[in-house]
Image (cartoon, helix red, strand yellow):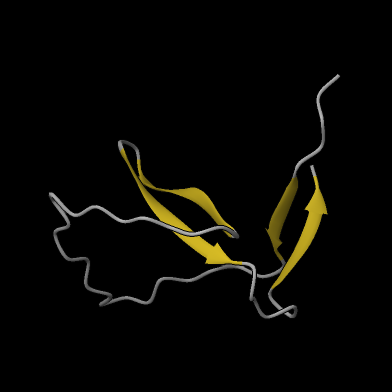
Length: 67
């Protein structure tokens, strides 16, 4: 039996505004402490972006759910 995990669910669309600049991060390493959640978002047929949020979020935009 699979145990349920706590996830964070977006209540609204997340929009990346036109003109947003993406900088090269080759060789960059990031480390996160506890309480961070990530999702991958399709940007094109062969590319995706990563979105990370912590547990201190606006409850109008996100909520916890057992999945």
